[in-house]
Length: 107
Length: 107
DNA sequence: TTAATCCATAGTCAGTGGGGTATGGATTGT
DNA sequence: ACAATCCATACCCCACTGACTATGGATTAA
Image (cartoon, rainbow over all chains, first blue to last red; front, side, top):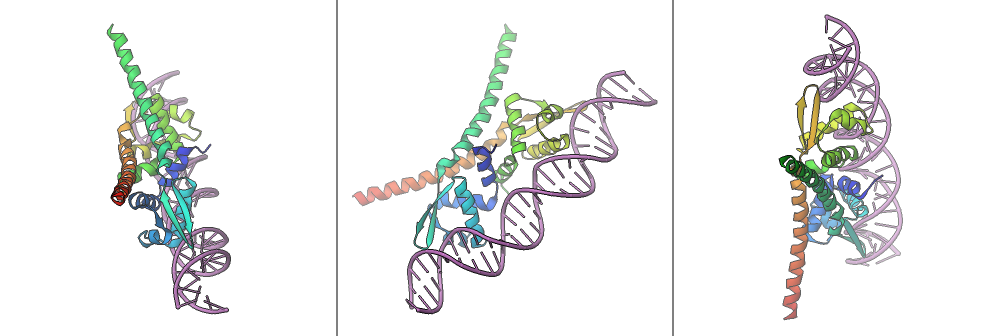
């Protein structure tokens, strides 16, 4: 029941989570500590959000000693782009049908 | 602090709401009754979701007698597309910078 | 006029989820 | 070896929200 769009929308709906993802997109790979420093929430909260982002495929983690480096996985946004295109496509189809109808009426 | 993306993501995060919007995109204008028939939730719930979609600019309503017709406003998805493009842009910039760095190292 | 239909609002309730603190495992520094 | 750092998990709490029913205003049908 839970498709890819659902997971993405729910994951990105939270501002804190989206801000983390945005930082990773802007600034590249970052450790949990570095992310926590400017996140405005506690470290456990950041870890939890990163876990959710990872589960959605939006980030990936790389362990190096006692630190964990996270980086954005931009490809995970594809289903979102697809969904948007699909919605636009439906709209276009209905527009085309209307156009056809008007053409037929014109004849 | 609540930008356009936030409102869109939060609004589209709910499956019931997204399904309503999708139906309006696919099938065009529909009354509340028609939407309720296949929504799987009660009529007041549908009305509430439509209200939230309207507040996000994703739908518009047209009153006709005792019925209210709702239709999708596809343009409202623009901030979402912009956000995605922005994220992709950041990623591309970092990629370009890496490319430049590699070029400089090569010389 | 009276009854029936359409929709929106009000009020309630339970589940979800995002926040915190506490804690422990793993690694690094002394 | 011991202390300190980094991160993740466990646990709790509270606010939000999505669901329901009840109801009423507005419009249409009888």
